[in-house]
Image (cartoon, rainbow, N blue to C red; front, side):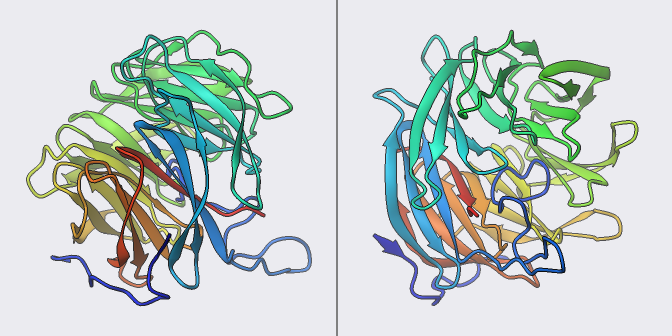
Amino acid sequence: MTAGTGGTETGGTSAGNGGAPGAGSGGVAGSEAGGSGGSGGTVVEPPASSFLYVSGYAPPITTFTLDHALGTLTDGPNVSTGEAGEPTFIAFSPDMKFAYAIDEQLDGPLAWVIAYSVDQTTGALTEINREDVGTPVNAHVGVHQSGKWVLSANYDGNSVTVFAVRDDGGIEPGMTPVPAGTRAHQIVFDSTGEHLFVPCLEGHVAVYDFADGALTPREPPTVPTDGGARHMAFSLDEKYAYVLTQNESTITQFSFDAASVTLTPIETIPAAPDGGALSAHIAVHKSGKFLYASNRSDDSVAMFSIDQATGKLTNIGYQREMLAFPRFFAMDPTGQWMVIASQDSAEILLHSIDQDTGLLTVVGSPIGVAPEPTFVGLWSFP
């Protein structure tokens, strides 16, 4: 199956209108797409394609290939997480050799993290092992910048579980879960890897020092956020952080003092027109000029420009075309493309991103996937 039309955009712009730390998807191991690296000013060419991974409340993890030049999605290999698998989020190791999926087990006694090796030619995943998190229901998984630690945000367990990574990419049994707060929802490290931030729906972001697999709550241990903190993202320069709330559908901009590891609120703005839209995910574009937030019950992805001097957000519109309860989205490493997963319609939809305005344009038609997709991720391998 191939989506897209060889670069022809259909559907037009939406009516009415990465990855920084915490953005959660996209990236090229060892370099930024289009940047320079190595010695003597060697230019690193942007990747020609990315692998797209799609998963959710159904057993398979489905793979596609996104051609960056043509704007097309082509079927790739799939892997099953087991008869009752619920791989609702996936993260990759920094060297892109390993992937880690949560198995949420919404109705089960224990949630799991599954480790995979990655075929960097085909994108295929091969299971290495799996370990439980010590509590029911997890919501998110993250990999430390060193690649030595994998962390699970435990939704029902109100905690974080740390796993040591073996030499083969598998994970050791989880350590004792560390309390975070009611409905822990995301794993976000700052760029140093020395500090962890965990948005929790009870109304705060938990903050820890992280060293050698140990989490130590900072003082104060939480940053209050009204409305049910769900996900957060840093600006590219890490001067600001943006926290998205699920219950009130707001975005609070914080200044971030890296020296004191302090978040100070600046302003709060709506993520959706009428609030209470079950907002889900937030991410900053690789240019640092735009920010996006998904609103599930509003069937929209909100688009914002970022003031480069102040970090303040200005709403530039909403993309609603052919979306149904969009829970998650991902941008490719070049910043040209976004894929949005519609949980209710079991579809993914490709969009181009205007590099000057940040506006999204639908490309092609929705592609059907396994029921209730909650995650999409785009990665390019060396």
